[in-house]
Length: 154
Image (cartoon, rainbow, N blue to C red):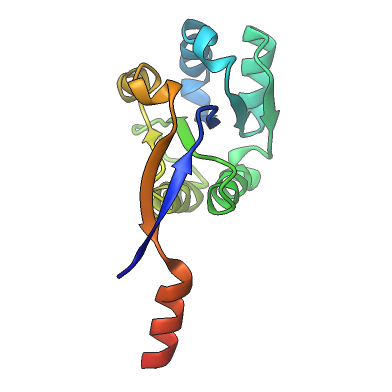
């Protein structure tokens, strides 16, 4: 299978998402890493985006809340190449009504080889990586070729 080389730019497009019980944790994390985050484009799901902006002053473009399609909107932005880094503080101990949407977001991040952190420790490692200040090349499946080959074999 052939791959395409994609480049994550020096300025990252970072999605910030948190389940309700983790919202204060992501706000604290954003405040702690504010000097780094202010150099990147930030977006997030509804309530999380609003709360981060109010608490830290960081501009965060808000989409719908997760249960109302926000996770799917972020996933679509990954497909469009407009989100290339995801911080998602999820709650593994509480059932979520939109769990299928969350799984779809995680899956699409994997398909497009997008860095994704779902806890503070991973987010800390990612945000302090040397790659935060430089371009990063990664390979993704050549979907057009893959689709054409599948169509030929059907």
